[in-house]
Length: 113
Image (cartoon, rainbow, N blue to C red; front, side, top):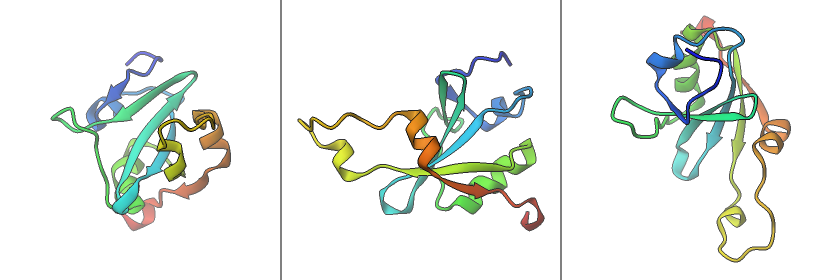
């Protein structure tokens, strides 16, 4: 796989990424769902399933079980504020860089796999 991430990527495609691996963002959504975004350079890729839909997880442990065997050791947990979605808000959106800098580190523990 090339060093530039595509906009969308499956776990199978991710398994073919060469070093250095992209940075993992575990993004928490409402109702206990989590999605995965991968960052490398200025590129961001959304983890999708085989049907082209956003891959959703019900907990960070499931993300670790999916990514640890591919060589990923950790991710950064981020979440959206409800105000980020408000129409007409004059507050600028948080950038990907800001989300990753101020997020919470989540380890993918291979011992529990």
